[in-house]
Amino acid sequence: MKIQRSGSIPSQRGSADYFTGQVRIDAPFAGEAPARVGGATVTFEPGARTAWHTHPLGQTLIVT
Image (cartoon, rainbow, N blue to C red; front, side):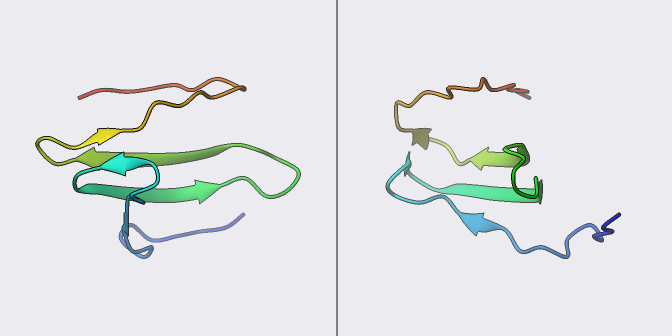
C-alpha cells in the first residue's frame, strides 16, 4: 500500500502537445507496470481545450 497525502504531489501544467490554453493536471495515482491504469483531475481554464485523440482501452469522464 502506498499512502500519499492530499496535495503532496504538485500539479502539472498541461502540455501544449495535448492542450490549448491553460490546463492543470492533478494525477494522484498511476498503475505500476504492467498495469495501464491511472487517474487524474484535469482542470480547464476558460477557453482551454484538449486536442483530438482516442483512448484504445477506453476512458471514463466525470464532468462537473
